[in-house]
Image (cartoon, rainbow, N blue to C red; front, side):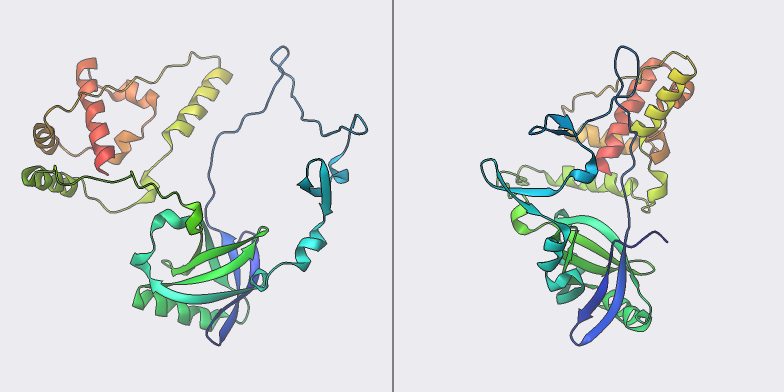
Length: 291
């Protein structure tokens, strides 16, 4: 298992047991190095001291807080440890709420929470109690130089922890509203039928990052000296009659998710004539929007 990012005790009421947190997910992307345009040599960033007018090594860098213009107070790691709240070692569940009441917009990062040695039984007890009652715990935890409000909830095989944004960090946009008064009953029924026809089990493994895959293929093509094939531009027909668009969507066969994430090279090999390809592109748009 990966190294833990936090170690301490989880408490609720008078029950306390040791736990560890492990990062549950991380984003994957293609990274590039910076090169000098003239000779393709690597470019390095230099840390420069303005007072001494020379480059300095990272070992000579300390943290500083600017309390007024050009005046700093130096802060070291020991200073930070001294003022760390008790939540740096103890995560206390403050209350339990219904899982359905937690708006996903507040969720930030995800972690697996595993029991540490001696905490297996109370961990399993809390996991099962939360699972059967469909509740989650709201707690506080200090890590990464910040105190977080967190959600503790049961996953498939163990407990998960999600750090949350504070209320003042979530944008409250009053203009972000939906006017449902203009919707007709027939339109709503057709939309429900379309959703029903495209309903499937949630399987994360069947979704892929087409952008990252295309970048890999493009890089390999350049390494091999091949010509880069441009991804065909999608064609979208304007929706003039929403009822007609819904009816045509229902008439068309449901497209598998895989077709929406194939690479541009695969599309070139498997796509039909150009005119038909436009209609298929419009269907992919409808499928992704409905999902």
